[in-house]
Length: 261
Ligand SMILES: [Fe+2]
Ligand SMILES: [Fe+2]
Image (tube, rainbow, N blue to C red):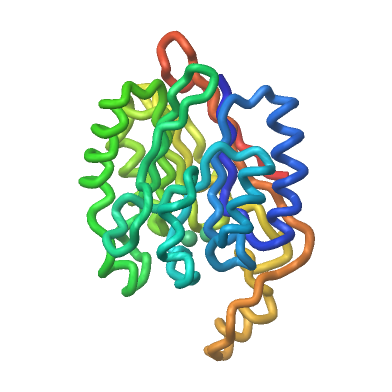
């Protein structure tokens, strides 16, 4: 059983690259299930219904989100109505699904979305509960539905918090993968008790940019301290993802490999 997970899709160039790659990788690698983080798909800031529709049409089975949920105020009432959209389960002031079970070819895939409590900014800090406590509730929910596999998108800034989550859930879930930093880490591993882990899957978006943002704008913000509006870079996109392979007899992960192209 092979699962493809794609890091934060940024803007139109990210979506265009996603369209090509998902189709190709799903067919070439015989992918059974695909999770895409879509939190930056609407011009770098959040996700609207049209981006949701596109990502699903391109081949995703489930879309996860992150802190960019708040950039699209008009979407606050809509998140919960999109059947395959997850929002972090430990966000306390928005309605949406924090976990779900998707049955495909008689296999029950469980997915949980969480957001970090460390270094995510003041506004986030006020509206999140502990991801370590919340994940226990979500795992119980999924286990009561007899899931075969559980995947966790831990959308977080702090490396240490993500590594801690990996150890916390080792042997209880199939895979803990980090998103949000937009830079793929080279620490993919299978932990001692069979959980696949990577600190950050990376980004599918404009390569010549500062994590998706036009570099000229990013430099003026950092160097001069100017307040400038976010503008998504539009040059060619990189594609960042992972493929996790699981043993269908033991339900444990046997390999995790990075895609960075
Ligand atoms: Fe992101
Ligand atoms: Fe993020």
